[in-house]
Structures are given as structure tokens and as C-alpha cells.
Image 1 (cartoon, rainbow, N blue to C red):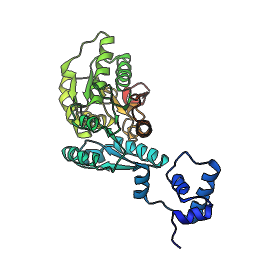
Image 2: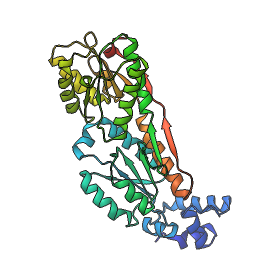
Image 3: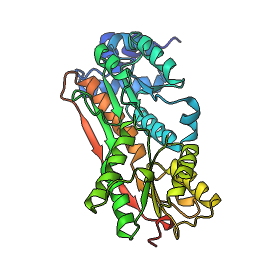
Image 4: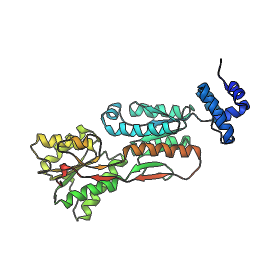
Length: 335
């Protein structure tokens, strides 16, 4: 027997249009009628046609996720795996799917413009955006709902969820200074990324509050990768830092390798603190003191904000800042 809306309507004792409204989650259906129709749908194991459902509701229930990073970096950094897990779980909980772009950044930018006009997605989540990225103006011009994972520094109309990067970095560096470290170095994130700029600002603020000037010799820019942290630490070693704040755990991991190769003991010679608290941080030698940011919650919150924007077009911008937590382990010498 062919299972269709007419058959469900016949067995439920309602009209076909009522069944259609139930399938498409129309709120204007009596609760008892809705449950009766849903019971029949479950009994018949009926699966609505996704394309037809989209036409009826004007929604695809598909969210796009764009991460403007090279594919190699995406799979090398556990941050992205945890973030994507949070996004996927929230989509599942809200009966949505996620479409992930995996391509080099320039290709992604060309493809997203095509897909914005295709009707395939209801909204977009953008993570790890560069400060001068042309993607945000394109999304604004297209009027497609979107949420950034990471704040936007200059456009007040942009919706975002972010970790409190500046205060997290401040807490890490203030802790190193309280331990009596005199030459605190930092490996920053990329200067063209908001997270990198905010964590650098937290580092500088902690120094200034102690009356210390920023020493350019104790600052090296990294790229949030282990290799970048290793190379940056090699540049810092001749200037004899006695502590290091690395703006990501991956860079801290590379820095630990450079210190080990140079015969510098951690934490006796150089105390080290990272940022993220990725799963490997506690298993490093020594275990890494770090700033824990709620990575998975960033993903789930981004989905929830985006669905709210889709359901309530024209509403006020949403900006959510999630607290970080300072996690003390052996690498800073405090325990």
C-alpha cells in the first residue's frame, strides 16, 4: 500500500490539509487532533518528502557552517572537532541538518555566494573569521540570517556568540605574574583574527596593571597550530623568558617541544600556560595549565541563536559572551 497524506487522513479521520499542517509543524492544529495524526504517522512509519515539506513551509531546515580555514588546519586542531560536534548535536535536537563547507578559503567564498541564492539553506554559521573577511558583507547584503562564532569588532548589526577571550587571557597572565615570573612572553594568535587580537589585549592589560611595559622581544605571532607555536618559541628563546602565555593549547604544545629541545625545564625554567583546554592538554608532559573555553557550548549556542533569528526575522541583534575558566596544572609551577 502506498503511504501518503490521503491515507493518513483517512485513518486519522481528518482532512488531507490537516495532515499537511501537522507534518509541517503548523501551530494552528488542535492538540488532540495533532496527536491522533502523529500516532498514525508513527504506526505507518511515514517519512515526509523533504523537498515537498520545504516547499510547503518555505524552510529547508538546513543550516550552513563555514569555517574559513584550510582543510589541513581544520582536521589538525581538536577545537574544530569539538565545535562541530556541538553544532551537529544542537541541529539534531532541533530537527535541523548542517551543511559543512570543507575547502580552501577562497573557494569557500565563491561557493557560499552561489549557495546563498540557491534556497538550499535557511541560515549560516561562520567560525574563525578573519577581520577583513568579505564573507560578512556578502551575508549582510544577501539578508540571509547568520551567526558568527567569534565577535565582530565593528558591525553592531552582526549576531555572534564568543568566549570571553580577553578576560581569559588576562587571568592566565595575571596568574603567572603573581607567581613572581618577571619576563612573561606570549605567542599570540594571528593578528587578523578577533580571538588573536582579544587574547593579546588581555596579555597587555595584565602587564599594565602590574606597571610593566610590553617588551616587543617577548612577543611572537603564531597561527594557532603546533608548528606555529614551535617556531614562535624558537624566536623567543634567545630573549630568555621565564614564563609563556600561548594563545592556544596547540601552540603551547609546540612551544613545549621547542623548550624541551633547548634544554629548558617546564615549569622550573619557563612556566607555560595555554588557552582552550583541548582534550590532550591534561595529558601533556607536564600537564598544561590553560584557559578553558566552552567550545561545544559555543556550537550549540550558535545553532540556537540562528534558529531564533530564522523564526523571528527583524529581531534585535543577539550577542552572547560565554565565560572562561582558568585550569591550573603542573606546567605553571603552581602545584
